[in-house]
Image (cartoon, rainbow over all chains, first blue to last red; front, side, top):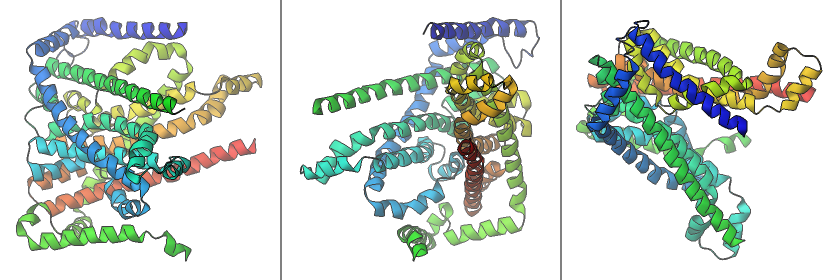
Length: 258
Length: 257
C-alpha cells in the first residue's frame, strides 16, 4: 500500500514536471512555438475560455447530443438484448442482420446521417445511437444468456409471471454485463460526438478544436483538448459512481433475500 | 441433416424480408430513392466500382494506412507495455501521464496531427498509432503485472537469463491480455483511418464515402459503406484465425510441459 501512494506521487511529479519543461522549450524556441505555444499561454486561454463561458457552452452542446444518442440507444437496445437472450427465435432472426451491420465502422455512418438529417443535432444523435448500439445489445444478450437457468426456473416454480421475473430476476442478474456494455459505449459515445462534429457541424467541442487548428489559434486548440480530457475523465468517474450505487442496491437486495 | 440444422433459416428469412421491403418501397417512391436507392442498384454500383477499378486505389490507400498504423502501434505498445509492466518505477513515473491522456477521445488528436504533419499519409498513420496504442498498452501492462511471480522466479532459479525469461515466460503468460488489447484496437484503427480520411480528404474509403454523399451519388456511397464493412469483417476474421493459431501454439506448449 505504501508503494501505491508513492507511485501516485511520482506520477504526479512527472506530470507537473511536463509543464515547466514545455514552457521553457517553447520560450527558448527549442520546439516551434507556433505548434507548441508556452504552457502558460495554453492554460491562460483555457481559463479565459472557461470563464467567458465559451468552452462550457460548446461542451454542453456536445454533451446534449451525446446524451440523447446514448440514452436512446440504451432505451432501445437493452430491451432488445433481453428479448434476444430470452427468446431464441428473436436472436436467430436478428443474428444475420446484426452480423452484417456491426462491422460497419461508425464514422462511415456519418455521411448517411448527413444525408438524412443534414448538419443538425439529429445527425449526431443518429451516429451515436448507431455506434453505441452494438456494445449495449451484445453485452445485454450475453448477460441474459449466461443467467443461471435455475434462477429463472425457481422464479417460475414460485409462480412469478414472465413479466415480473424479467423485472425481478433477469434484469438484476444480467445487470453487471449490461453495465459493461454501457461503459464501453460511454467511451464510444464521446469519440463519435467529436467525430461527427469535426466532419459536419458549426458548433460543439469537436468543431471548436478543429476550427481553432484551422485558424491557427493553437493555444485554443490545446485548451479544447484539455477540456475534453477533463470531460472524459469526469464522465468515467460519474459512471463508476453510478455503477457502485447500482451495485450497492443489488447487493442490498441479495442480502435481504438471504 | 446436421448441415440443415446449422443454417439459420429464421435469420435468412428476416434478412430477406428486410431487403425485399427495402427494394419494393424504394422502387415505389422516387423521393425515397434519393436517400435509399434500391438494394439491387447499390449492389450494381458496388460491382461496377470494383470492376472498373475505381475503388481499388481508395481501398488500397485505406488498407495501407490501416496496416502501417496498426502494426506500428502493436510494436510500440507491446514493447512499452512490457517495460512499464515489468519495472515498477517506470510505471509509477508514467501512470499519471497515462491517466491524464487516456480519457481524452483519441480523435481529438487529429487537429494536432494536422498541425504537425500536414494532411498526408503520415498524419493519418500517426493518429491511428496514437489511438490504437492505448488499449494495447493498458492490456499489456495489466497482463505483465498479473503474471504469477512464481513463474518468473522459477525461470530465474533454473538459470534463465532476463531476456530469455522475457521471451519464454513473460510474453506467453501475458499474451491473452495482449491479444485482447490487439482485438479492441483493430476496430479502433479502422475508425481512425476512416475519420481522418473524411476530415482531410484526398483519398481512401472514408473520403470516397463522404465525397459520394456530397455529390449525391447515394448508391455509390452505400457501396463504399458495404466495402468498408467487408474490410472490417474480413480483418476481424483474419485476426480470429491468427489468434487461434497463436493461442493453439500456446496451449500446445502448456500441455506439453
